[in-house]
Image 1 (cartoon, rainbow, N blue to C red):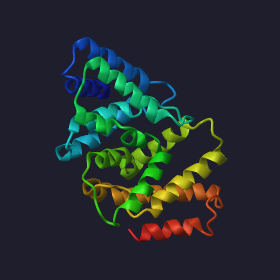
Image 2 (cartoon, rainbow, N blue to C red):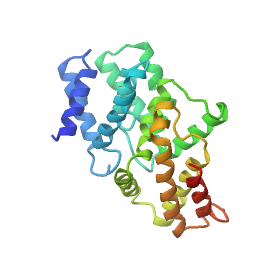
Image 3 (cartoon, rainbow, N blue to C red):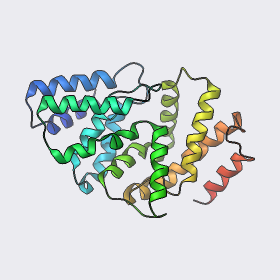
Image 4 (cartoon, rainbow, N blue to C red):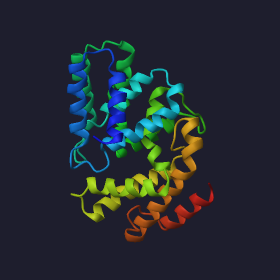
Length: 249
């Protein structure tokens, strides 16, 4: 077990202090087995460790920090890039854990609803984000725990160039069954949506720290993909669009 796993194990045991040791160990092993699957290049245990680093930055602002911590552990416990039911299956597995551990915090379950776990899939993330933008005023920042969880999930977009390069590479590996052409087309659409929305991040804390760098990272990736597949978005000059967006930061 490496240092990251040791840290996560300590977090898990503290989080599950309401149940007995055997239940803790059984579910810790299930979590490790799921996230250490050899086909998980990005959605791995290392990713969970990274999410908790972002979580630590906003923990003091959360109404139910325990709920968000459980969501981090369980939201991708089921993950198949070709499946449309990862979120539902992950929520069901969490329910199994809650039943076995006799966890009955009613306020907690509202955070573990399907909508809260929807962030597991980046394409669904985009749909959710667009809907939120329609409902909210342009520069309104949200304080609800679900928005912090959302921003924790997306913080990788605003990471340094090395971490972002790893994220791109690992994400592509998870979609290895998809042809380069199909992947570029799908990825360009996702990246374009990120660039067109006024706020990638939903909370003031994460927006101030990650928004500018996220747009630069996304724009750089967008430009690279455009050099291979310039007509994927039915845009006359998508690279020019990217350059304009970077200059406006």
